[in-house]
Length: 343
Image 1 (cartoon, one colour):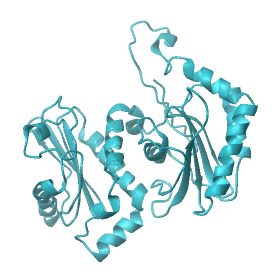
Image 2 (tube, helix red, strand yellow):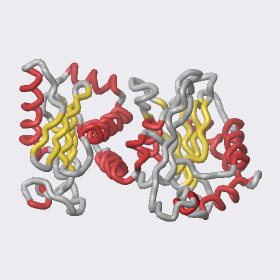
Image 3 (spheres, one colour):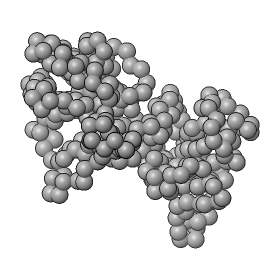
Image 4 (cartoon, helix red, strand yellow):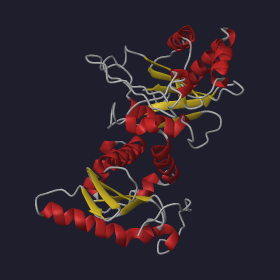
């Protein structure tokens, strides 16, 4: 049985112990062959029989011409979600609805796709149904752990929106124009973050005229390279990354680096379609950093970060309001609008 209030334990946690059972929520990923791929707590190999039972339930219902979606038993919700050859299961005794849990599982699946691409996952299991996907995901457990942690603390993931750093319009426009000027061949996206909040994002429309980078892809990218609580990255990072909402079967090549700005926590993400573009993209970063300093934009960003975090309920002149989240409705007829939220 699951309980609540237990601290997160290492991956070597004994899955037969009370500590493992006491976790409020468990997440499992397995293949259609019942092969364990990921478990939020404990070792996947030790949970192979448990995952085998989960796959047996999925197969039994499928044999009857239906798909299992969720099971409610006392305080527990068991939610199943199948994406191609992967089966994801959430076991929770929290207040979240099955739809919310299913949305979380979707993020876990897309984070796996961001590392391997959907086409690669499908091709692997077409060739060998009992393939152990952990071989290709080795070392990514921390990334998935971090994503699940963010799903419990960052409302933007479930809202399908991103949080921007509040800035004067002129300052944000100046930063955006700088990003637009500092480009190189095959550079498609430039994203500037300040302590995990979005400052500006620009896109080279000549390369991707119609496609747009949506909130879900941004959250996956932030979790991988630059968001709050993301695994620490020293120096410059150059890595292939799949953006499932934009192109689930191919890679972009992402450059990530922190900028020299004491107290600002500035992180620059540059995405290219050219795997050999590291040096030209790194040169863009240097021009952006120099431009921010030369135009006095760093001082403006640092000042904005010294203000209290969030919009603040006190600014709304509603003394009885303790906290709020605000996400505007999607703008009709404007699919290019990036969904944002304030708190």
